[in-house]
Each structure stands twice: as C-alpha cells, then as structure tokens.
Length: 453
Image (cartoon, rainbow, N blue to C red; front, side, top):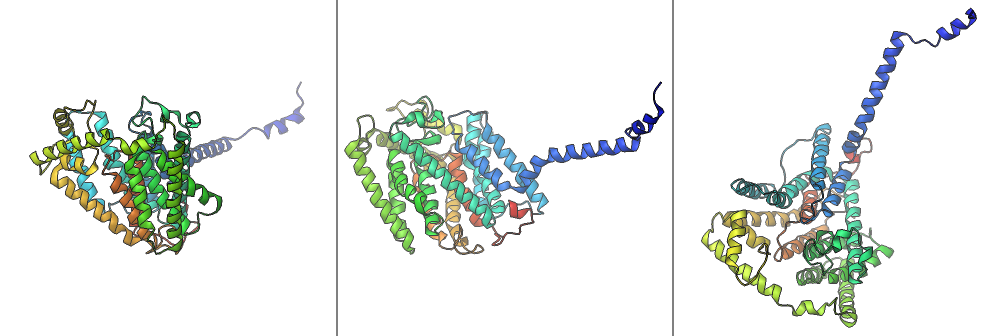
C-alpha cells in the first residue's frame, strides 16, 4: 500500500491546464523569435548582405553555370533591402541621376528580347548589363549612406584587390596549383586561358577591375587609411598583376590613370603615382629579361591577329548601323547578321568587342544617346563628393578627381570589350549610388536600425 505522505509531493509536480497553456505559448514565442532571427540579421545589416551578393557575383562569370547562385543572392538582397526600407520608413521610389537614362536603355533591351525567341543566355546577359547594375545603384544609395557602411565597402574593395593581385602573380609565376578557385585555370572555360584572367575568365575584365580597385586603394592611401606593409604590398603587387593580364587595353588604361592622377593636387597621390609608374617600369623590364617562351610579355606588343579581327568586326558593325541607324537590329538579329558578314575569321560566336558600337548597332541612335546620358550623369556625380561626409572619410571632397579617373578607366576598357560582367558593372554603379545618396549621414546613431546597416 502506497504511503499517502508522498501524494502532496507528487501533486505539486502536476501542471494545471493554465500552466500547460502558458508553457505552450512560451514555446511558440521562442520558436517564432528564433525563426525570425535570420530575417532580423538581414534587416540589421543590409550592407553585409550587399557585399555578400557582390562576392558571389565576383565568382560567377558568364561562362560558368553555378546553379544560378548569383540570382538567388540578388533576390535575397532585394528582399532584405525592401524589408529594411519598410521598417526604416524610407520611401520606395527611383531617385538620383543616372536613373532615367539607365531605365530607358533597360526598357529598350527588354522589349528587344521580348520580340525574339526565348534564350536563357540572352536574358542572363540582359540582367548582367542592365537589371543588376540598375538595382545596385538604387540600393547602394540607400544603405551605404553613413561612414560605417562606407568603411565596410572600402575594406571589401581592398580585400578583393589583394585577392586579384595574388591570383595574377601566381599565374605569372606559373603556380597554378595554388590558384583558387580551380576553374580559373580550366582551359575549357572562357577565353584567355594563357593570361591572368581571374574569376572573370576574361583578361580585360580582370585587369580593369584591378585598375578600378587600385584607384580606390590610392584614395585610401591619400586619406592615410591604407599605410604600412599593406600599402607597400599594393605598391608592388598592382603593377605586376596588371602586367600579368598581358592585355594592351588594360596596360593603356592603367598607364592613363596613373598619368592623370600624377597631376593631382594632393601630394601623397602625386608621389604614389610616380612611384607606381617606376614600379611598373621595373616590373616590365624584369618580365622581359626573365620571360620564358610559354609566358611571353613582349609577344603581346607584336601580335597583330586580334587587331585585324577587331577591325573586321568594327567595319561590319558600322555597316550594320548605317542600314538601321535609328532603332538598331536588336540582340538576336545583330548576332545573326554579324556572323553572316564575317568571312575571313571562323568563330563560334561573333562579338563587336566594343560596348559603344554594340549599343549603337543593337539600339541605334536612341540607345547610344541614352548611353551618353548615363556617362554624363556618372561624371557629374563627382560633384556630390564630400557634401555630407566628414573630411578624411571615403567619398570626401578630394574623391571627386578620383571618381573621374575611376569612371574613365571603365569607359576606356569598354572600348575593347562588351561590358557583360555584372561584378564590374555592379562595382561602378555601387560607388555611383553611394555618391548619389541624397541624405548621407555624417554621424551614426547607435540605437537605430539605420546605424547598423
């Protein structure tokens, strides 16, 4: 027979229906809060999501089908920023210079695609050239609007520059086993397998990205944020990395940017440019003196076949423009017509290797007019530098001259390649959006959602 003295002790452990209901409510609340934590992280730090999306775009070249991870990252970014703007009660509308001509050119390309049979590659190219850069421009002006977020982007730029330089130097030294990711050295992917082409699988895109990021690094050196051993690393690594691309357009753009910045009013910038010119000359002389037959730099100066091929493409493209000058041929018709006009060269696909000529042939005078409007607005954005940021921070007043060179590097290289590279386009329009930010805050409020973005 059970001892009755134990019953009160057991009865104290039996929960009432109210206690059970309360415990279930607590469990549901805990589950709900835990499930929302990733969403809270997205809202609290949209700039980190932005930089993560850019990183994925860096490692997603056009010739590599990587399960469309870049599109997933782009959609996550759009979701995170939309929720962030709603929570912070910011208005959701298109603002800023560059917006309207870019939107107009995007619509031209969009309607051109609608009139042609569905082809996934064409839509992917359309997204990389117009949709993604346009969205990043609008997003960056809203989330990179205070010093903390700007510093994150600047740090990201320096890290990417260091990575691209290391990869290029390893390629020049033929240490391909150390190059990561491995697809960079896969000769079955992309073009320019004999050059330092980086994750873009295209030497011009790699070289111009190094050049543009080097301009940002030079600005960081001007403000003394970049100094010491890291500054010395870039001082020697950037010229070698540019040389390793073995691409004359990249060499020309790099030399031109150094010459322009050598006339800067800032003494640190002038001295740095003169030093970089000397380092580049030393790197070139060393490469010529110790080059191997399989890794020739001098041969790139003498090679004529790419020039002849490009001239043939330019002539064919100009003839096509004269036949349809107002609205152009459209994407698919342009490719077919271009292939029918080239007889002396045998290629699987033909490209005009010039962004401006391609825009002219695809969309006619209307398209090139909108593109010129975009370029003018991009250059005018430099006037926004330093208006609402503190002196000595990224995008301060002296950044205006840096920005002009940054844009000119892009424009010069666009004369030798079609800008289908969404990371390169995204990089340009990200900085443009930062400059266009209408209400950039000089001080950060630590308890607000905006301060953690």
